Length: 597
Ligand SMILES: Cc1ncc(C[n+]2csc(CCOP(=O)(O)OP(=O)(O)O)c2C)c(N)n1
Ligand SMILES: [Mg+2]
Image (cartoon, rainbow, N blue to C red; front, side, top):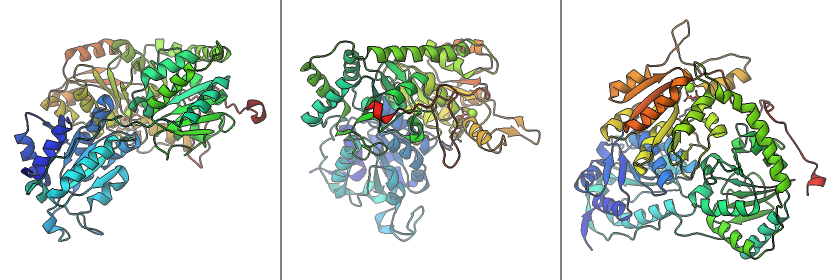
């Protein structure tokens, strides 16, 4: 066995797993690893953003675009504590991040050396990170590294992917031992599980018997790369598809069978179809509160009156919120292939869903009649709809949107049409501010040949403005559209709605007169060496975006958007004990259980 340093083994293992990047921030704890990355710099590249949060969001977004992981590297103590939030985002949305963290030397464990957390246990980062990773490993000797690295990579990529942590004491990077490089981990989706044949047949029986079937897709469909199989299946049977944010684009959202997102900020046809369906096939989707109108019957769904087939890789998601009529523990693509094969053995009634699709076409027309006029309006500050529509008009089908958090995101949830899988990145489950603005950098490194546009509110952007420095240092040509409404407007709107119109701490003001305040984002960008423009009239946005994308350089567009125009609610969202608001468009519908089954 070759004799090598722990850090050399780590670098070699990353390279053996075809990991091209480490996104890392230095500290005294990880200089041993940095030195080895220096020696290996022709085979693996260190990108060093100005904040650890950015490093982990970048890794998360890179994985979502490419379905291949990268690693982060942070130092002991505060540096690694800075990745907790982005790891939570990755965990909540099943995204892989290999988080290598440094710790204090083992010989100093429990002596309270600089940056050790040891109130309850020595070098205790693993207990800080534990709730936000699939698993944390702390090899305390070089000869423990091969097993820890192989298990970490395998855990991260298998089943439902997610972040893992390898916490490495300072001396373990530096010390040498005789160790062999472990085998690379299987790539994503190398090991797939299918459904039991009886369950496939039973599921198809239910689907073929349904008059009003709907498929609800989530990130599981994207992760299993099931777009082709999904499209083939729904086209054969004429079944409409509702998409959760991270499932968007698995069925081209321009397809008449695509109904868009569901829930309070969903599209009206999706909520209408969801609450009137007699059967829902949920694939890799988890019925969170925002896509289930807080589980209030009649707004988005009507389980158990509606029958439910729920397919997921994770047993914790089957029946978490709605007990299924058939629960199937399987990979989405494998299951769809099984369904397609089973379908070949059946005689089909033609046009089984014709009446249902006619209903859906009617709801779509009503929704378009209600929303379309606002897409035509020119205004200053700009109406939100224009930004969404002009992004769609300018960007090619394979462009990637890295969305941040806030009311700006709600508009994209409701109206964006993703044409391909893995082109719309959303921090959905944990909604960490900065994900879009920072993640765009990782997305661009994953797909250098495609335009990458971050949609970030003024609030989100000011959480991570130093992304501009990283774009310049590493020449990463991301376009940031800063949706500037001078406040944390999504939260302001909740505050105004709940507390009689009073506002505190949710808008950006200067001084006693409460003059709206924000930095001049274009000047800020230029100060960092990034080209920029301020856009205050809707007529100017399209051309500015075209120019920014074509420039091939990092670019900031500071876009002043009307804070008083709200996305129309088509479902409900409840924060108990506050009473929920009725939809602006559409109505609750609860079927009579006797007539539905
Ligand atoms: C790190 C973090 N802090 C706080 C929140 C709570 N939060 C959610 S949206 C939001 C405001 C977002 O403001 P902005 O980016 O300007 O978007 P807008 O809603 O104005 O479009 C806040 C504070 C969060 N999700 N993440
Ligand atoms: Mg804002």
